[in-house]
Amino acid sequence: MNDSLAAEIANVAARLVVEEGLEWGAAKRRAVKQLGLPARTALPDNDLVEDAVREYIGLFCADTQPAELRALRKLALVWMERMKEFRPYLAGAVWHGTATRLSDIYVQMFCDDSKSAEICLIDHHVDYEPRSVTGFRGELVDALSVSSLSPELGEHIGVHLMVYDLDDLRGALKPDTRGRLPRGDIAAVRNVLELPDELL
Image (cartoon, rainbow, N blue to C red; front, side, top):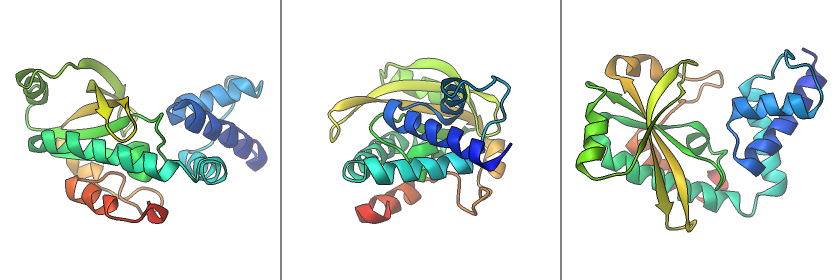
């Protein structure tokens, strides 16, 4: 795929991610459609889309996004602490710093027993919806989805508690293509919450 077409798709996808809260895969597919390209057009990689999202946020949301990101990370930490026995890790846009108030929170849990996290929610009378979401290897993963109020944002945010086997944790901590940790545990999320807004 040529670089200019990849950049064009990534830029349209970035707008959809930021303005409509779409996940990256869905945003890339919608961008191809909006640009009138064939459905089989090759999609840009996630690094290119991430760069475009960061650029879009810098241009259009620089005054609001850091506070929104901080609020989402605080809410994520609340859920991670509630579910700490299941080895929770924050992933996705909220971890990587590209989230806005339209973004959902993805917490990946690595459990000895896949049903134990669900039982924990039932025991605490938490309303949740079981569903399947795309996991970090592109496979479908069970998720327990809740709607949780963010006090700072004054609105409900989707929180998806993704259930993995404990064995999956080994491969989950390998650095990504840019050498960054692809997810963060409770201590890592606490650390990023201590950073000033300009470093988020």
